[in-house]
Image (cartoon, rainbow, N blue to C red; front, side, top):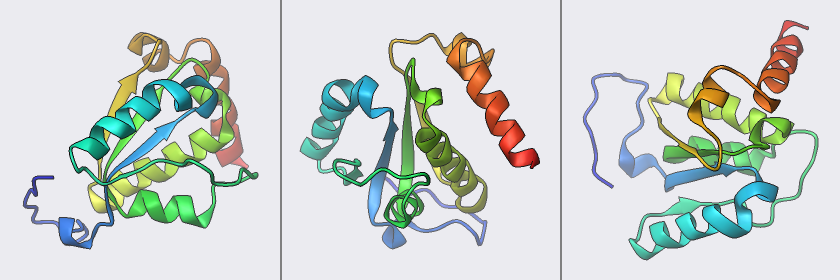
Length: 139
């Protein structure tokens, strides 16, 4: 991956990162399809990519997953029809956004079988999920 210079002291240099790319995706929607193909293509180009293949699910994202997000230069968020219905995915997204703010991590959204306007306008499952997420942070 090409390095970019930054004057911010909070930015982490490429040498300090373990992964070039972190893939965030809804497993039921994309794991055995697009996410796997993308992972393989990146791996083939020798781009070190973290993909959650076998981590145990729980109520919260695991410390292993949090660390993988923090140790990545770029997060690719594959937004699909059911991405927002997963609290796990939303927790990942929150941590990814936090890393963008704190560490200048790059976020690349991919809209997989969903129009970007659905996410932007918070329609369908995204409207309900984001409203619930907002309530969760209020309390």
